[in-house]
Image 1 (cartoon, rainbow, N blue to C red):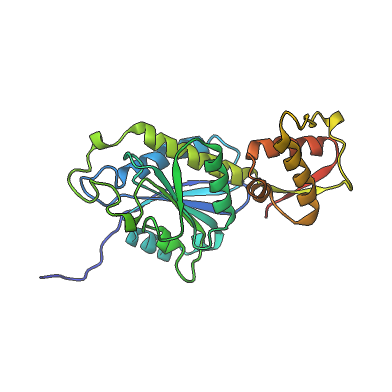
Image 2 (image 1 turned 90 degrees about the vertical axis):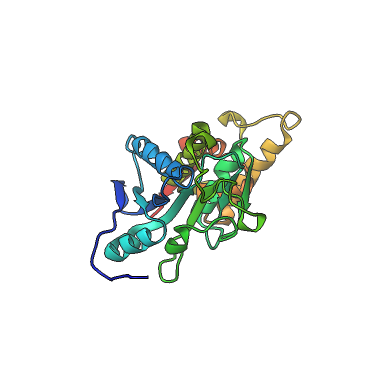
Length: 284
């Protein structure tokens, strides 16, 4: 094989949406497989559409969307822009979103970052059939770069690839059969909506700090429900009162611990705050 080493260019697409905190979240899709659609034009489409929605929000985090040649593009871009590593708290990789497989969430290396918990909260609230896999069990893309030694940015992946141990990620994988008619736009939009909800949980997260002692009288707050109608409701809201005093937990962590919807937890905490029963401490 005749080959030469010479200087050249490696094209990377980047969209930066600024937030107020100085911290950022990296979102990645790869664009390097010629004549293939699901792997990974679907991830690119989802991120481009998502970028338009994120611009309309009041964002705590900045969002850096990277469209890169898989793995080597992320390595090269971060090597030449290492200041990104100092400001990035989390990463999300999207790949192969349009095929008919069930959705998979691949966790970060630790599996218990704030991003992992937010993703689990969002998926628990949906009716979407999905599986959760440990880091490296489902897919191997740019999360390997963000989670590599010395970088260690907690990164999840969302994909419709089957786990490696179960065979090919999808039947048309890495072949000329990966064509537009094998995917649906609805499946791509479904994942895009999930990512937006994950980001909005992180965006609104805070530490609720209690200003009360003892049990809260729920009736005047319109938070009491007859336990014969909904026994779990009172169990959960009483557990919340205890958690607020026992641990320094954020809203995302509390919703995950109680296994309740983030929106319901926000309703309870907003009511407590309006009645001067707690205050908010911002996430740094």
